[in-house]
Image 1 (cartoon, one colour):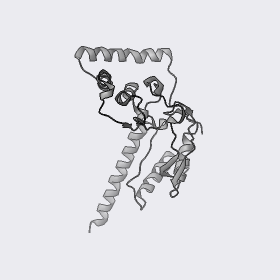
Image 2 (image 1 turned 120 degrees about the horizontal axis):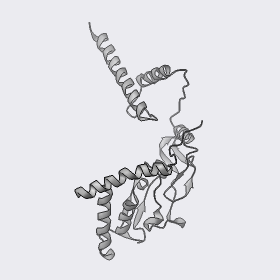
Image 3 (image 1 turned 120 degrees about the vertical axis):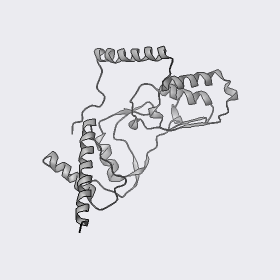
Image 4 (image 1 turned 30 degrees about the vertical axis):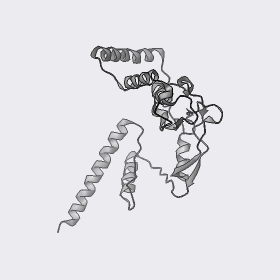
Length: 228
């Protein structure tokens, strides 16, 4: 299956088009004297660096989901502990990053070469069949993990859960597909953890309408059956 790239290259014209509204945003922000989220982090970082490192009240800092932090966001916890032994624990998964790329840990003064960076390979969340199906979708989508190494999308992961399964359905039309989806959701069984994954915002709107209509239709049918 050929997958469309989710990270198209930007031409010079595109970069200039993006930069213009950013400059206007910065101008308006400075004119009105307001701060955005990154400014708050930068102010906190400046305050931390102005303090005596030896007087820091923090013995250690643990940061989860670091793949979605900015460079300033990474520098801030590092400034609280410096390079103290076991002072900073960063946990993240580059494959789950909302915003890909942008900086390296070395730019924040954090060195994870050698055995300072460890890859966790045990999956406690997903059943084996489900995990393999998901990895097949992202097999050709390489990413840069927290250890700054370019990694293939299909990783070597050992699942703990052996239950579960994957059902594949091939139909001839969108209408048949949508009806099969409604039938599957109406089937007996727990649905509390169900999710419908969509490739675009337009698809999200379409399936929201489909599921809403299906729910109303089913409620109306139950009401008619209960009417004496």
